[in-house]
Image (cartoon, rainbow, N blue to C red; front, top):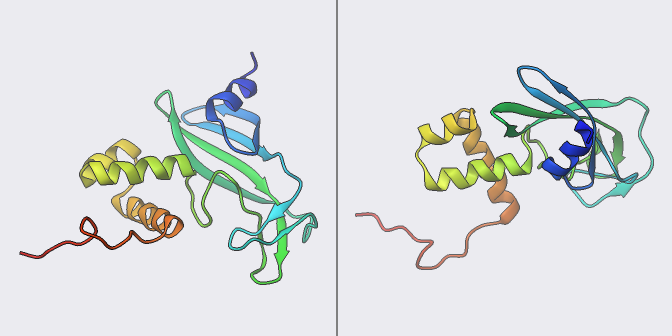
Length: 156
């Protein structure tokens, strides 16, 4: 079995295919999108037409692979959104404006709810400020919690 085929199955990235992999002190995985239609990361605008031929190299930190840091790299295409202007296309495996994949962010946010700051920082190998930004992005995506008995905190 080829390494790219194996990583396609292990990483299980939505609408994305592993193109190449480099092993070193960290695992660098080059991926490419499966869809031809590009979408704006901030709204529902979709188009097939590229703004220009220039590509934007982007990288996202993913969950570790066998104790090594895994970085996903992708050459993103650029599009012109009528509302937001010229920007790089969105990717299905990461939130807009993030340098981490959804899987990594979801793990860090879940850990933040279960563990103390030091444990989350050491386990994910990121600073606590970064975990705070991940929690904010995740909260914006899911929306506010409903106010109820469990949502209120009483001061003593």
